[in-house]
Image 1 (cartoon, one colour):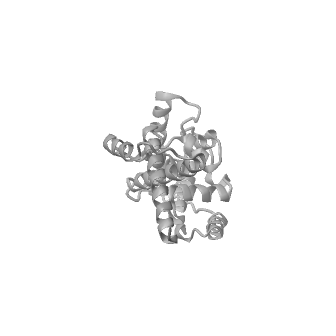
Image 2 (cartoon, rainbow, N blue to C red):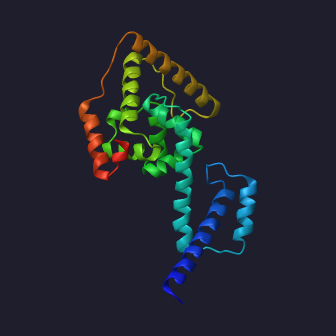
Image 3 (cartoon, rainbow, N blue to C red):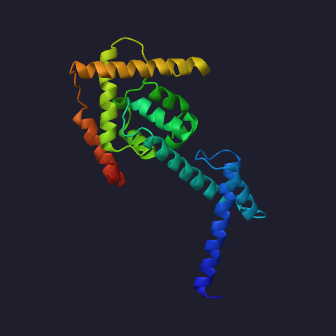
Length: 226
C-alpha cells in the first residue's frame, strides 16, 4: 500500500473516532454548545459500531469538550456587544451565557470552585490574583488586555464607591437566595459605576499590573490578546 493511501486511511479512522466521541459527549450533555437531537441521531447512525480505544477516547474527550466550550464562550462573549462589566461579573456573564458550570471553569483554571465563585461575586480583587492566573482567565474567556483593563478599572471604581457597604453576593448563598443577591449586587454595581462617572472619580489601573500581564501574555506567545 502506498504511503499516502495509508495516511488517508489513518485520517479517516481518526475522523470516525472524532465523530464517535462527539456523539458520546453530546448524548451525555457534556457539550454546552447547542446540538440538536437530529444531529445526535445522525451521528449515532454514522458512528454505529465504532468503539474507541482508551487512548483515543481520553484524547478526543478532552479536545472535543474544550473546543465546544470555547465556541460557547465566544458566543456568550459576543452577546455582551462590547459592554464590559465589573471583572468578576464579566467572567460570570460569559460563563453563564456559555452554559458552563463554575466547577468546570475551576477545572480549566486549575483552581477550586470556591475561587471562581468568590471571583465572580467580587470577593477577590483582580489586583490580588497572580499574573499567571489572570492570563489563564484571559485565555479561557478570550479577554484582551484592553477589555481586562476596562473591567478591572470598573471593579476598582465600584469598590471605592461601595466603601464598607456589603453589596456583593455571597459565594456561599444557595439557589434563589443567591440569584436575588446577584441581581441586587449587579444593580448596585452598575449604579455606583454610573455615579462615579458622573462625579468624575476616575481611578487608574496600576501600570505595574498592566505591564506584568502584558509581559506574561508575551511570554506565552498570546500577542493576539495584547
